[in-house]
Structure formats: structure tokens, C-alpha cells
Image (cartoon, rainbow, N blue to C red; front, side, top):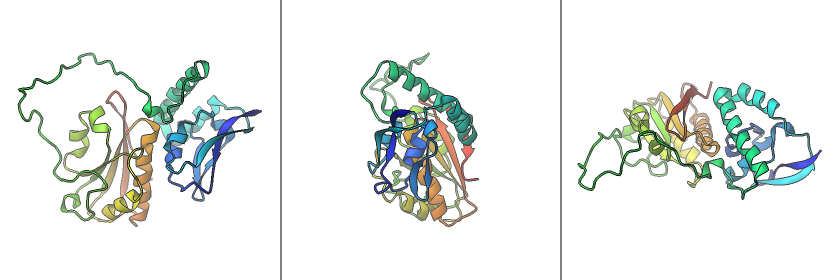
Length: 264
């Protein structure tokens, strides 16, 4: 059938992998350093991946392609990404079905879509005369941003490392005590930061053999998966085979959905 599907400009593609994690259907993979469509039946043609590409290598085209098969996709993502991936796809598929019946201007990454979270016990605004400190800080270093932290800094030595997405400590207040406490940390956003140099910087940090593990704390929106790809590439470039890479996923509601090792 003739339908809309993703087109990849191989000359522009830099193999960063953002589109792979940005596609809830698992339709894309990095093969020989370039993004490719795994199977046409996995691509629904809605283009959530387009907003994740830093080099504008992704676009739409109309061509002969097999029809999108949501049942095959569900089996595919459950096999390759586990139940969290299956849940992410089902949510994306529901959004896409709604969009098909009531077309809207595309916002690119679904993480850009506005959402109001209803809280059972919504706290009021803090009073102007609140005490200077209510909660004890958990961080033990400065700076925090990945662009600014220096490899070899003493606050990275002999401890685990956490690469924390910019949004997650705000979405989930317990991210600080759960992941920042007792660890060296860096904060980054794979979508809005200038990520050139992030892999090299992180690889230089992780080359320290006294760092046993890196935990990536990311939001559940697809574009945030680019942070995990940065960590995985950096782990390889660090030259270490003993380094454990974990991924903790935070929901928009502030729940820790899953923590798993991703470099087995």
C-alpha cells in the first residue's frame, strides 16, 4: 500500500541513536553507524522520532510500504524493551489513534505535549516567611551540569555516578535522596542541551576505575532516552568492561517505573 513513512537521510545521520529511543514502536535501529527502519510494519508514520534528531536527518515520505501492524509492534517492543517498552508503546498508540481522528499540529516529541497532573493532596504555595531550609540537600558537589563538571574531580572518585535528566528531580521529589545521595552526579538534557562532546566528556569521567556503576535517571518520554544512549556510548569509549550501566525511568506522575541494567 502507498502510505506515509519515515525517511532517513544517511548523509545527515550521525548515528547518535536519539531516534531509536524516541520511537515508541521500536521501528528504528542503528546499523553500521546509521539509523535504519527495522521493518516497515513497525513504523506508524506519525513521526515522534523526527523531533529527537539533532541533524534533521528524518522526514516523511509517501511510498509503497506494508501496513502498520500494532500487534506485531507490541510483540516486538515487549521482546526488545520489556514491559516498560510495551506500556510506552500502548500509550503512544492511543495518542496516535486519537490524533488520527482529530488531527492536530504536530508537536514532535510527545514529551512536549502539555499535561496537567491532578494531585490528591495538592500543596499550597510556600509562605514568604518559610524557613531558609526545609529539606536537607543530598548533593555533595558543584558544578552539576555535564558541560561543566571536570573529569577526574575528587567528588567522582570511589563512588557510583548518576547521570540525571534535568526534569526528573522536579517530576519526582525523591530522585535527590534516591539517586543523588552518596553519588557523584551530572545533570543533562538530551533534547535541549548542545550534546556535542557529551559522550567524550562522560567517557573521560567513567574511565576512572574507582567508579563501579553509572545510573541514568531519565523521564519516561521517548526523547529522554537519548540520555541512556549517551551513557552507553560513553561506557564503550571509556574502555572499561567492568562498568555497570543502569537506567531508572521516572513517570510524569513522579513514580519510579523501572530500574534495570542496560549494558548486559
